[in-house]
Length: 112
Length: 112
Image 1 (spheres, rainbow over the protein chains, first blue to last red):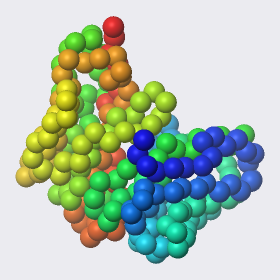
Image 2 (spheres, chains in turn red, cyan):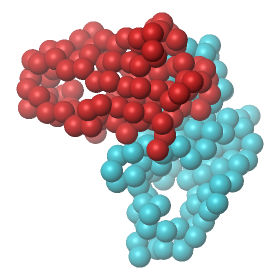
Image 3 (tube, rainbow over the protein chains, first blue to last red):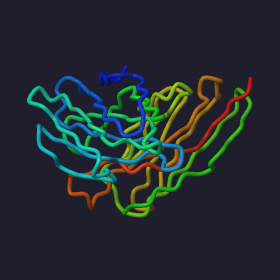
């Protein structure tokens, strides 16, 4: 158990819908990262937050957004979902910005 | 951006065999991690090793930062070692604000 929790574990929804994925980092970790793992793109970095502020963006679509709250948990919002958004979404956390990242169990999203 | 190449892409071994997985990266890094993704999709931290050598039980890793490669050694393989092994790097040029860039992984199958 990495100490990073993600909910829900599985999510099935339809095209055009909006979903919210939630992540709680390890106790004491200030950085939260979101990653997407799909069969064709592999594991890709989406976005990073540090102590409530957005710090870096990767290959995140404009239909996706995220935030980190004062209690340091984070949410990833995916809207206008398409079939190609079906993937495993991971959250990771670290103490600072270049230390070891610990990954949560992931949320498996299926868009039908 | 930084490129990460892993080899071999696939590896099938008998239980008890030893193996060496390689990760080459195209630029200097501040962070290099090895992960094992098990058949249930969990990403398990193996090593944080931007340079030097570390050992943990039957696993060890070496990173030669000046030559931009890292090696993961698995000795006396067990069937539970099966899965995908990922190398991921945090580029030095990121300035502390970035995410991990992952290789495509080595798919390891250990046969009983």
